[in-house]
Amino acid sequence: MPYDYNKERQEAIDAGGRALQSLHAAQNDLNSAKNWGIVDMLGGGLMTSFIKHSKMNNAQSHMEQAKYDLQRFSKELGDVSACLNLDFNTADFLSFADYFFDGMVADWLMQDRINNARAQVDEAIRRVQDVMNRL
Image 1 (cartoon, rainbow, N blue to C red):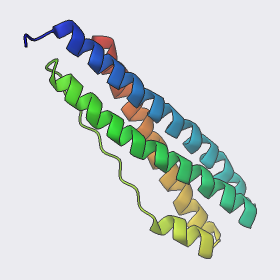
Image 2: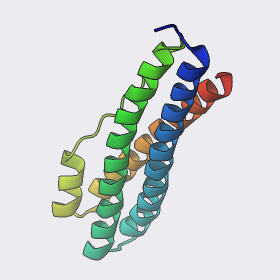
Image 3: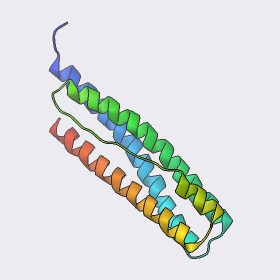
């Protein structure tokens, strides 16, 4: 079967669109978690921690989907001679510490984790959009 650049390019664009959709969903949840984290640091209590962690769990799910979508995007980009290499790392201990040691230190660590995740998602969005613009 002959190589069809336009078809491969469109497949890469479609895969990039799916990746961006997942990344934006994670970004929205992380922004919400950040806001709830601020409330939690100001003494929000158990319900606030629960809501914040719910947002973090949603963001983590979206980031896992984004990771899959980015791998697919990377594969499709390989078909049009471009590459993208992104990775997301998540750790569960800070979540555990925040629930069971609901003090200011654990809240600050969780807020830092949220901010780091937001920075990763923002960078991934920027890089995907950059590649998509070049397609």
